[in-house]
Length: 197
Image (tube, rainbow, N blue to C red):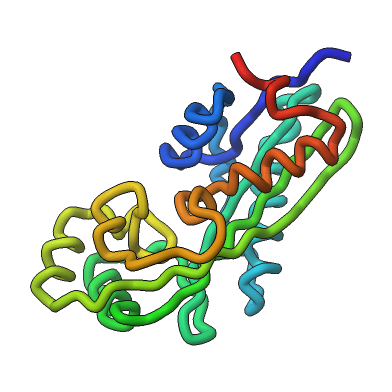
C-alpha cells in the first residue's frame, strides 16, 4: 500500500503554510462543517469533536486519503472564545485579554481511510498577552486580522507583537501542532518524511 494523499479539511491559510513549511503539500478541501451544531463547555472536548467532525465531513470525497481536521479555541478565565463575530467583539475581547493569560487549544483529527483508523488528540499552549492600550487595540482590530482567528490574534501576523511569551508548542497557536502531527503519523504507522514532496 502506497502513501495516501494528505488532505487538509480546513480553509485556514495558516495551517496550510505550516504544513508546507514542514514539507507536506496538502490537498486543501474545506469541510464547511456547521460548528454551531456542537455545544460543549470543555475546550479540549470541543476542539477534538469539531476537528473530528470536519475530517469526517470531507472523508467520503477521498476514499484512500489521510484526512486531517483541526479546530482551535482560546480559553481565558474559564471562558471559551472562537473567532470574534465582528470588530466590536474583537475590541472587547482584547480589553479582557490584555495583560492576561489564555490557553489555546487545538484539536487534531487524522482519519486514515486506507486502514480504517481514526486518531483524535488535543494540544494546549499557554499564551501570555501584553498589556496594550486602547489605541493599540483599535489599530489592531482595524487591520481585520483578529476577525479571522480563534482568540482574536494571529501569532504569525501583527498579533505576534502583543504576545509576551508562550509555554508549550508554538505552531499549535498558529493552528496545528507540528510535533503532535509527527507523533500521530507515527502512531498510524507512517513517518512524517513519507509525506515530503
